[in-house]
Structures are given as C-alpha cells and as structure tokens.
Image (cartoon, rainbow, N blue to C red):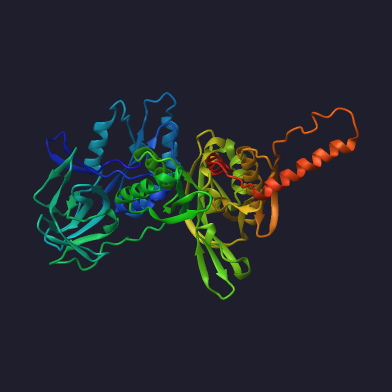
Length: 547
C-alpha cells in the first residue's frame, strides 16, 4: 500500500486556453489516519472519491465520504481500474447510487494505468470544484496538514494559506505551541520543491523556518504572523493520542542502541509514534511504543526492519485499560507489568469501538459468527444494495487489534471491508494472564485479557511453547495462571536414557533400584537446571495469528 503520496501543484491548460494551478493533496484512506484525512480535507475545496471497479465501495470509502460532506466539499466520483478483466462498472455505479447517495451518471470512468479518462478528470476538477476563497489583505492564517523532516533544512511544513500572505524573512507563530520562527523559504510542490517569492491566500505549498523536528509542529495547527496575528486559530485541531501499545525488543541484545537510534530517526518523520524504555527479564532492554492503530503498528515495524535492518520481537499488542481502585482512584494501564494488585481493584473497563463491516450477502453467517466470537454486541444489519450487507456492531478494541481484519478478509475471500471509530469505555471482567515455566513467570508473555478468553489464550500459548522449547534432561512444566490459579498446563518430558538396558534376567528390585536412582538425579537437575527459552519460541508465541 502507499500510505500517502506527495502533494503537488499541477499546471493545467484547459481547452479554452485558460491556465489553472491544481493543488492535489493525497490522503491515506485507512481509519488509523482519519485525523490526518480530516485536516487534508479541511485544506481543500473538493475531492475525487476513487472507487475500485473490481472491489466496489468499501467501508473506508463511506467513512471518508462522510468526512468530505462534513467539510461541505464538492465530490467527484471516479471509477478507476476499468481495464481489469473482473471490473464491474454497472455494479459499482449502482453501489455509488445506493450506498453513497451520489449521482452515478456523474462518475468518471478511468484507468490510471492505461491513461484512460485522465483528461476528463482534469476537466471535471476545473468545472465542478469552486476556486479557493480568502483575502490577501487579512492577517495570515494557514493550516498545517503535513510535515516532513529534511536532514539539512529541518522540518518542511506543508500548509494551505486561507488568508493573508507569507514571505521569507517573516516571523511566524505556531498557535498551538506559541513558538515563533523566522521563515527561510517558501514555495510550491512540483516534481521537486519550487521556490516562490511568497505564498498568498488560496495557495498550497511548503514553508521552511528552521523548525528542528516534526514534533515541534502539529498537524492541524494554525500558522500566523508574529507582528499581525490572526484573531483565532482555524477550527478542528486536536492532539492525536495513541490507541494500541506494544513493546519492541531487538533479537540480539547488542542491537539495543541501534534500535534506540532507529526509533529516534523514525520519529523525526512520524510524530504520532511515542515510545519509552522498557525492560524484560526474558527479552532484555527494549521500548514500549504507542501507535494510532494496527496499520500504523505494522508500518512502523516494517519500516524499522526494512530501512534500518533491525530484527525485532514485538510483544502481543494491547490497549489502554481503566482500573478503578478501592479508594476511588482511576488508573490507566497499557502495560501488563503495571497491572494493579488484584485486591485493590474495584472495577475494570476496556475501550469499545463502533465497527462497520461491508461484504457480500453470502458471507453473512461466517462474519456474524466471527463478530460474536470477538464479543461483539448489539449487531445491526442493513442492505445498501441487494447483494451486499452492512453489519454494524460494538466490539472491544482489544478483540480487533490482533487479527480481526485478516480473518474477515479470508472469510469473505477478500471482498469484506472493515472500518471503525472509537467509542466509550465499558465495564469488563479483566484479568492478567501469566505464563509460568517451571514455576518462573515469563514477563514478556504476560497479557491483560477478558476473563472469558483467558483460558483460550493460555492453552494456545502453552501448546506453542511446548513445541518450541527444546527438551532438557529434566521435566519442564509450562502453565498459564491467573494470580495463584492455574488454568492451563503442558508438560515437556525429559530425555531419558534406558538405564535398564544392560540388565537381563534377575530380580525386579534391581531394575526398580536403577530407575529410582535415575529419578533422583532428574529431580536434583530440575532444582539446579534453569530453562533458557530460545528467541524462536517468543517469535512463535507472539505471532499475531492467534484468533
């Protein structure tokens, strides 16, 4: 997937010879980045709503359409990939009509790969999207919708100027941080950055002002002039908070400093990733990270291993739970190591989401079963078109973050789509599941789970550990426990030499004596021998295909 393409200012000459500058801003479509999408939409006058001719309208399409309607934007539906053999243009037009409520006759058919319909798209932008409004004479008011890090120039801020103008040499103020910076350079996004004498009302471009890191800017913040500030910031700004948490550990202990350096460099370009130091008796030193969602987590993991060449172990992703203690204090916990003392807990709560799934009718039974398995409640159905079902239900976020989307895709043979928005916290019976190996707790495998799902998790982890831990000269007992209560157990039998092989005939007591002697030796070994769990065992257990 492309997470986000670059913004570009495209010069376009219409059939009547009139010249236009088209500012194209691409947004990610995934729910994890919905805030970035909303800020990019706030910078625009209209949108191209692209629908795949073979896949049709997906859950994210509907969610992003609503965002565009909230901003009162002109919407041009575009049906792409019409060159594919499995393209179903009439079916997609019907979905655009029934599910999106847009006029399917106004949809433009195109194939970006073959270059079909591109001229029609550009013509529609000019005729159907209004030009930007704004006064050059008013105080400067510009919206930050993106920021990238340049190792030589610092942060390059992408912004849309609504009112006023900004030139090199101006002193600007970022209204959220209340920091001031001197503008060094402004310009437009072409195939490369194009210098301009100024950015004025209605323009989309970049601004360099010696801002050291991306963290010093905030997407959605307002830029104004220090000397003549805007009366109030542009609406819609909010701080983005992480939703999913996991710990990252290097496979080799020597790579800890390389991981620390890689996270620092990565964060220069992605301010939404947060991290702090974490330690584990089993895995050594690492970092506890917070992500916007599952896709964000996968992107970070993939880029750290691909761009920085790191081999990583990631613990089971978790969410932030709320614990109300006996004294009335409310504690937020996202790490199983910080689970409060059970006797102090009065009640526990976990975050829920409003989940929307769209899929062909024939998969209704399988998808419904999956949602109920994941503790989905209050299911609601609708049929946007005769052959498609939209299923809405409330689900615990913790049940979705492991592998819900992958399971949905496989059950619906790739035709299902999924979208969600965060809901509220609801009371739940939460427990901390610990994994014990010969009575020793393995901290890296602890997790906070719902009581009803604890045994399933415990059995699965114990079975996987049994497969992965090498046999020793003594018996290894693998257990899943909640507090002092054992809820699952697997036993890994020791290697055993046949000590009676050299006996033939004679009294049975001789045989028994040798076996007793062997048993004593094994017991003594068990007392002094420690089980070293190989890294491969952690990787196998922490694989996220544990639905």
